[in-house]
Image (tube, rainbow, N blue to C red; front, side, top):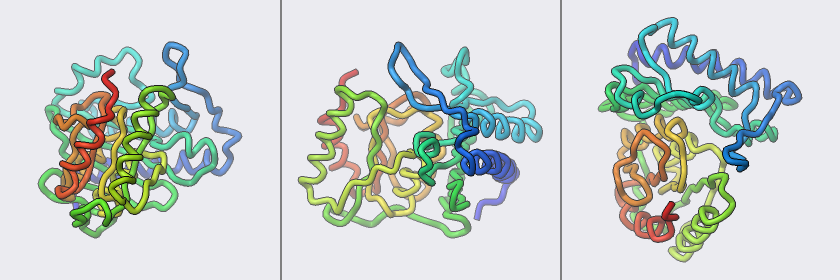
Length: 275
């Protein structure tokens, strides 16, 4: 199990956020759900729970580590993300991954917290808020479901596994590309497709071996920062859908075990939108 000062701070931050999220989930009428838009296009939902949980996470970490910096989903306006990436100490935070699930009363969402040093992920924590399960990882120390070490699936063929997928808010070319990739995966006799609506927990499913792979054509860094390290520490591979190293920036994401990555890459890269 991972024991460190960083892990202790992250757990305390997740504890504080979980209290807030559960309180709002018990009475969704208080959540004040609004839409985030860009150029008139919906970019997702934001609730009071998102904003307050993020503040609790940052305040908890800052009280223990006052010189550290933050890249967080609900606090990116005016932030020079490119400059933050190389910060000596950076926390990448999604206070409520799966806001659409939350806002519709679906009990499947997570807190995602990652810690980077000079652009390299060192630690990750994903908390399933409803079940209370913690998924932790640390560079060179492995990945854990609560206190149990986990690893990616040993499946060597698509006909031995489930595949996870996510959809971005674009309802045009990107949606069609995702559906075409799914169709090609079904042609390879996968057991099924699952779309659960929270990238952090989808990546956990890869790391714990429940999914053979997962892909999404657009994700933000706070969606995958902790999950990427979790999959890698569990023995898996994470790249863009073009096969490039995953940047700490908005990107496509492909995660799988070592046996399936090459074949999944052929499929998802074939349909990836150019823009």
